[in-house]
Length: 457
View 1 (tube, rainbow, N blue to C red):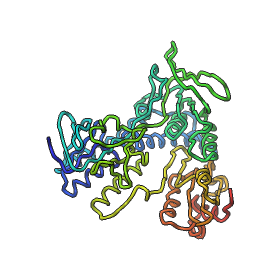
View 2: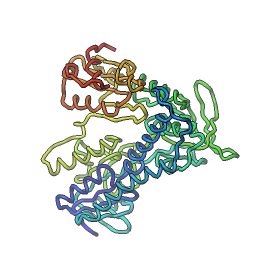
View 3: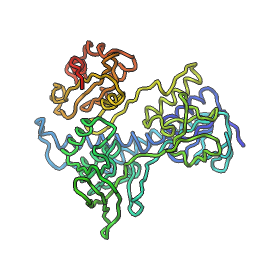
View 4: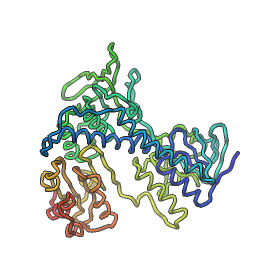
């Protein structure tokens, strides 16, 4: 059995920087990856999907020049083979950089294979047995596949990125972040798109106004929605078409026929493949590894980072997990998971930027809140750009005057939200932002204006 100072299972956005950090401290590292160096984000997540989003945006601009006085001759079309090739080239360059860094590092031993526990701190990979006092699990997650789709050739967020022809009619099961991003981009590429969602609204964790606003501007682009859909399943008909069978409160039992179906109903952690029971590490009822504030499991010296610990399902939270581990171990700090404030984006167009808690969550928790609100249609910069869909909103604790959460749904929303996140990390009163001076003409300059007229909800 080979002995290392540390073993890292998974090369995602926490595992990869941690491997290089440990190596820089002259620690012997066993680095295990069963499939793609770089993990989900780089290979089948953020990088490829945002590449596609950019192509879809170009398509939208080609078809909407007239509103701004630009006469673009008709005939623009999306070439999915070229879009895919650009995506593949970007990924290849990044993966190559990681691979070369590993190969050149004398302290990292790379194992391409699937690791599994055979003892408390012992693993087997490719028939080799290895052990270390420190083990970091960063195995990520995969699409959850519900029952009812056994007889159809379904797509996931990964396999849809391998298509080279635009679907004639894409059916998407799941009206949340992944489903909406793919829905809008493929509609812009030229596909007919139908989104099926069990809930009464799409992206149910958001405030109702957010959900309805996103649905409205996607419907304006031609995306079809079926909400409150129960008993969803799918089969193939004699012509090879996908037949999605649903019961809707509004329309009763209906069948929707399409050429492709994307399942986007959530994800599950990859912990079931680790044989964790042999290590003594505990998981919860959903398979997430249980960790403390410092990401350590119930077994001393074994940590879980990224999607598999249930503490966040984003690239930025995974990277923050790495920072917590690295700075606590080598920087003399005591950083905790609870130090971070929830923030994320939904990369439809216009994008959604979110930080903190929503208005409905604040009210449900009993906060005495004040709410500021501003429609994008009342913001000069948005009107000048011809992009007036959406709004911005801030939720403030009326007692402490601290910002509890904010939403920026509109042009630049994914970038603008960081300014409000910084204010929250600085523990500032909303009055500091209200009384600040922002450059004109920008969308951000209306944040102080919005805060001048806070009201009870």
